[in-house]
Length: 335
Image (cartoon, rainbow, N blue to C red; front, side, top):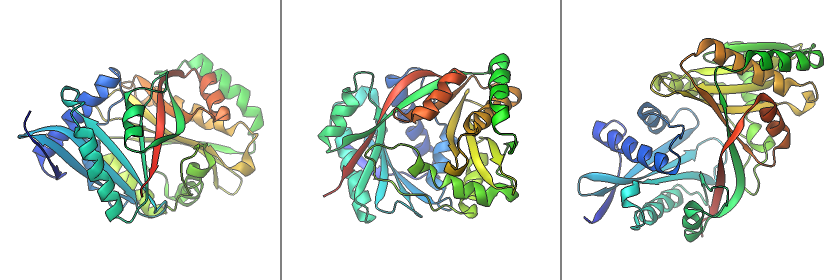
């Protein structure tokens, strides 16, 4: 095998992004033949965005001229300023040759250079929760800090079940206005939506992961919506509004682009002061109805929740989501 060289990738260089996508797809499908994949356009959007509250850099590991492994490091710029997130993918034909370890060293150096001390990563850990990803992470000094369960729901959604769940929830939230929006967050909802969304990371169970509330503003939200459009994706969201027009609950998803058939469920949250009104079920149903009615080309919705998040898990099970993968959130504090 040729000696391995590692260099930073240029998101504006077509060959770099072609290789990045090829390695990513090969590695993901080797672990899960029906994995929900991000597109090449998603990768470019992530690496080129700096005005949405985070920055990201990518590195490629090359054997000669061929990319055989890759690293991405993402840094939050507004909150969680001691943390960074690290992703590593290695072409299955080149695994177990130390490429992942070399890329991890580059990633840790990048994190240290940014003045951060906590590295976080995510990977499939299997039902036995002791697969190759777990062993690799532990060899690098990471521990499993949280366990997440991925579930999937086929589209279009069963309309009879949707009607029944909406009817069961309706008597509990008659004091709230439910609004479903396909596209960017409306200007009149943006401020209260962002204020609530910033609490998601601390309200959702996260095990031993080191997290703090988000600090996004309306400007970062607008930048995120622009990135979605540039990647060929669409935001689909349902909001519950109180009498003052404030967003007190939401569920938001993002469609993949035209070449992919899945939808990513991003987050669902109800303001603690407004819980007990079945708003979580109501907004989830609103999103599923919009997806079923407006996106006939999409085949399933994918969502991930901490296995300890019993309330949201119960809602997803009532909707019919079925377990597809078990993921681990890994964390290492750099010395």
